[in-house]
Image 1: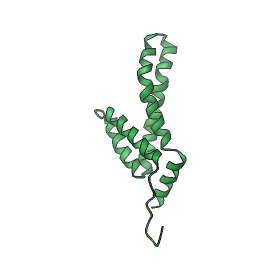
Image 2: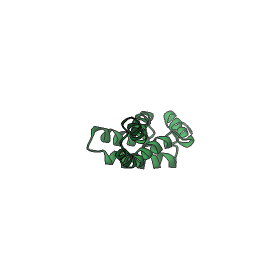
Image 3: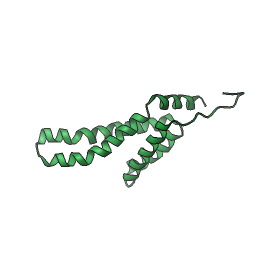
Image 4: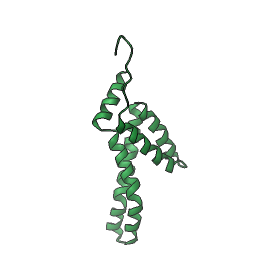
Length: 119
């Protein structure tokens, strides 16, 4: 604060990149209620709202883990080879969910959200 006026911190690049990834992922799933929730939460997270970041983190962790490890677990228990081809389809979106989530929790992003809480 400078003379009683809150100073708006600059948005770090990691938050911007995460926002773009969430927009793409939300756009791909916009026909579902989850896609709309992703889009709304991404705008809140970009504005510095910690609730938006928390919602995106929960979605990113669950979907990221399911997409990255779900086909491998299916392959282990079911044992069908076609699941490996399915796994290749899920790896890219799963990695995008994981990356977008991790970018929201980097050092610069944490400092940004901490500063926005006090503003």
